[in-house]
Image (cartoon, rainbow, N blue to C red; front, top):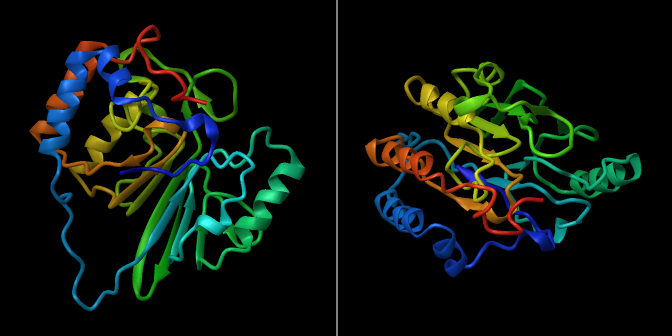
Length: 251
């Protein structure tokens, strides 16, 4: 699971002291969970005949041309928020620098060979390996903006997430599942529930999202009792509240 790189100045993560001060109990629980989850994710290794596939994950570039910072790879995925205002000139500038990159497969926006996914799947092949990728721009409602759905109690909108197929290899969503790389608690509970359902069938190898700037990073999701306990702690401690959330974590 990866919350993609965001270059914006407002994306500074809260300090250790800010996190501890906002909720000491949850901060200590997060450290314990982080220690328990430091092991490889539960995915079988590919056959020796398969060469590694390098996927570059970015998001929330907001009109910033970061082409000089992007390393080479086979797949480039831009999760969300290409521009500030989504005007045609802004989009064109972004399409220009994304289109100039040499990656064979570019996912999540349209034009010039870049694949746009809106609640749909696309299959690609990289050196004999096949990957089914599903992308959705929708996210729980927060402020104004396109592609938002209403939160409904403790589970958000589970029907909205039923569109995610059971047999995907890579999942791209606007924002995170609740309790994982979502510093301000704006992660989707329904998305987390759908991920647990996929875990019982065929769990995606990679889940990429953006939106929560200060939550960027990588987390190995183990789908074990330790993770389940962590998620229960997050819910019960009400860590993510409007009064206590760290500042500058959400655009």
